[in-house]
Length: 393
Image 1 (cartoon, helix red, strand yellow):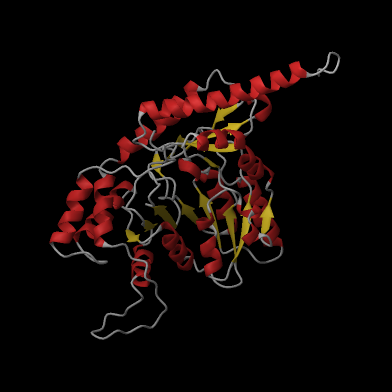
Image 2 (cartoon, rainbow, N blue to C red):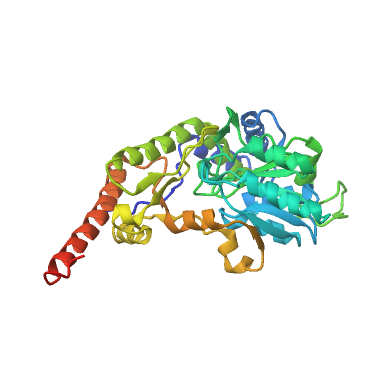
């Protein structure tokens, strides 16, 4: 049987036509019609805000932090339960990440803990330069509460929507409320350009500056003139062609991911100890990945035993992100709270969620998960039966 991947790229025919056009017209570098059209189409999704297409979501986050003035010696608050790319660019600029625990409703950054961290730092007379709010697994953080807290101290938010294209908060696409927001088009995301990202800002001057930095900060001169340090961060016209084709099917991909998550939920409705990631009441969760919590005592097997059972059948599944405050590279970083994120990591599992996942392949995943639980229960029952009379628990 073929391997079942966690989150595979899902391409159609439109993407190929745009790529062929780029090659046929020799627009294969970091300028060209696909780039311009991709940015225009993406701008429509984010309410007409200006944007610039970049080589990765990480590159976008890095430039976004620079736009917000993050520099050496600053602190930046960041969600702990996230991928390392949310935190690494903070260190690129010589700043220090301060990790913040999750709340249970959405698994995203806890506004009460953000308020606690900001109040403590305000009393010391040194507020963080920014707050990186991550929209985890396609679910929005509680933006209203986070914005109120940050506005109280005049600390800007950067929305990390790398996992949240198609995610809505109160009916609006996330990544449109903060001064700067970023998206990712990595190969495993809901839409892909193979690798790529987008920076969005309310201020067009910020986008223009990011565009300038992304092309090695080259000044408009005949010769190569540089007054600032720049980066090789611009997306190519070829990859932008893939993005153009992908944007045309965004709503279809969101619908498919949600249907997969809810099919898992319904298939496991009679199985104790498996619970779908909460669907927060304030918006549309795309369920980019179908994430469940495992209660070992009720289910009969641990999260890691489920992972092992799936791997044995050539099915890719993963734990949820290991929190940043638990990562060796950030061992000396400050963290506000941490118990919730640690618990979600210990018990959370991501099932195959590709938008082109066939029903029979999803049935295969479901069958393996159910068999893992049954096998553990049988083994436990056999062990109990083998005990001498009087020794059974």
